[in-house]
Length: 78
Image (tube, rainbow, N blue to C red):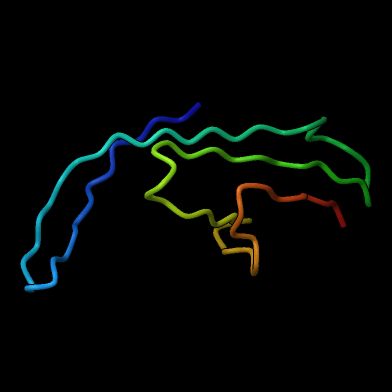
């Protein structure tokens, strides 16, 4: 489990900015082994708390994975 304190800036309709600090918990789990042979897969599941504020984006080697923006991602070796 990784806990991060994020500095969030909310822009109001009137153009005013309000800065707050929020505690965010991100948990990632694998439904199986994460070391396997070429062609095999593992289902990864992410959980973000608080749930109604943040969106998912899975990243590989520092680059966003196109279309991987749900709470689950199936990783595959090539």
